[in-house]
Image: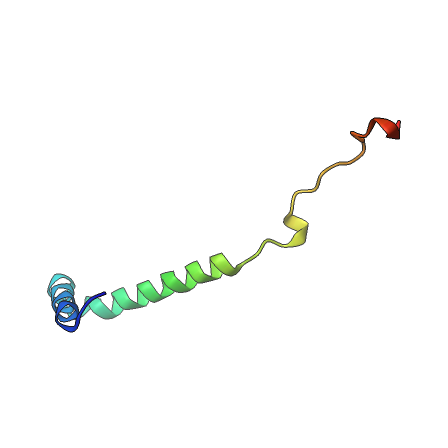
Length: 64
């Protein structure tokens, strides 16, 4: 993990690269992306979306 001084250096470099006006936009976009990813990972497919197998023919030879 980052120590206090390393974190401060990273923040200063980001501030220099993107400028003060771009930081809130960047943070908002990162938050939206994180929320979208979390929603996508938590959505389970509905049971009706699950593939069904057709069992009209049996593999059991005693069933004939």
